[in-house]
Length: 201
Image (tube, rainbow, N blue to C red; front, side):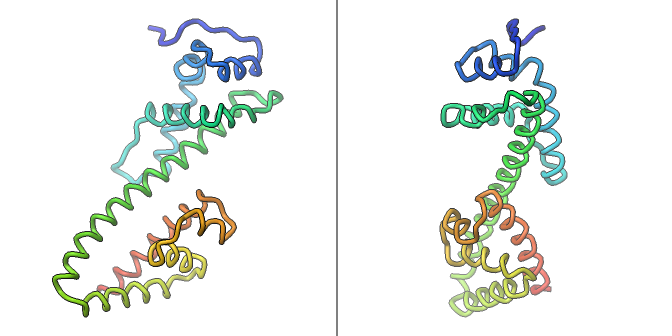
């Protein structure tokens, strides 16, 4: 059974113009027609590469998020499409980058939620044990930060976790993008957790 109505176009440029104009058949063709298998493949590849074993991500949800992303700011990303390139090749590159970044963002959000829950329970335990234990915990955190090999990692974690600075301000200060900042933070947090675990042993 066909999930999309018949749609024909003569050039990739026309297809992109139809998408921007809100042509429903062009939209259905993008999401359910010729490019569906490409999008599903890239979504699954990004999830398999960047998610931890045992976790999963629904390709349909990722494709829906990609469509919203393409629509943002009056199709700003799609308007940058160069008609001299095959649209399928352009879509392959753009979709995989989006799926990868979106998957990493979801993974980071899940980790932050886990850390927040752990932090809440830890705070309750700390208050029950008094200020001496809080001081000891802060010393452990500072020691673990100081043992990180990268000065940039130390400074970024210090800014985000200890000083509670806005990510946009931190990214601007270090001359990197928000995506790069979150990638650095994710890797540095993994190193920090290992250092804290070594300290507790």
